[in-house]
Image 1 (cartoon, rainbow, N blue to C red):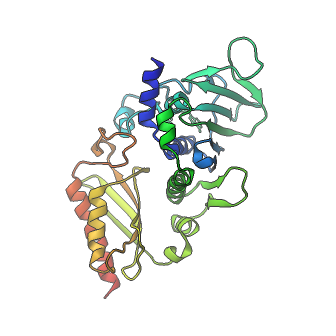
Image 2 (tube, rainbow, N blue to C red):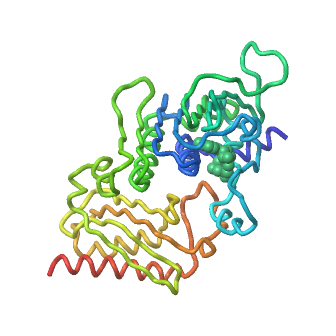
Image 3 (spheres, rainbow, N blue to C red):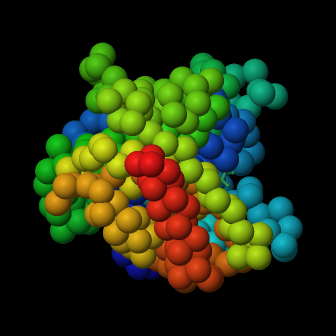
Length: 335
Ligand code: ADP
Ligand code: MG
């Protein structure tokens, strides 16, 4: 059974960056206004995330890593929107099957924090304690700290596949950068554990365009145009920033959020690149940040959680609508 769980968990969490994404989403869901991430050895040795959100109560700590444990399914109606991103209540469970997880958390009602360690979904005793495992009182601020150590310690092939910590760190920087831009109202930091240099930093009160400047550089931020479009019939609304037609980057930077989840859409990516190809030098691309809201029922529920690729109802029409709004914007610039 535990091998089956482990394999299933390895499907959900394939590398440190997936685990970070899940934990960032949890911190956002918990209403955090600061999220601090630090990692050791590309996250393979350790991922540490600290937020100032609602915290997890002492009573809930023993079960948060059990499969299908979620505090977010409030009513049956929620199912449609919750299913959108699959596997609700599976992230922490999965992580605890393939790594050593320690959670320290304090809610606003508690006088101190509580600390708990997990293995294979279950609470385990920490060193030197006798009796059944239980969360241990300790010092700590309001919010939650989750430490994930030795990812895939029990899956040799998986672990060996993560042989390049620099590459894994790069993927973490990518995920944190994108969430940091999108989530105005939350200050993010990312750094390597034990180092003082911060690789990503945003402030809780800066705008999305200020976030782009802070994370991707002022050089890009000052080239941005604002775009938006809406189609109530299709149940969609888009807001974003795109680089002007006289500016380009080597690698297509596409920050796409659908209903505040980081995703990718090949059809949208291609449609946008096509519009720009009329303006940009060969083999160069735009920088695009786009927040798309689509009625949750219209987003494909069958997409595997690790595949960022997403499909949605009326995809061709929606892509066309967005493409048109970008085309118009670029045309307007060159007039
Ligand atoms: P889900 O997010 O789908 O509910 P997870 O496995 O990601 O499932 O998390 C399980 C539960 O643990 C959440 O529903 C939430 O109650 C709790 N939780 C996880 N991370 C945090 C956090 N940073 N702050 C507060 N609660 C958290
Ligand atoms: Mg979650």
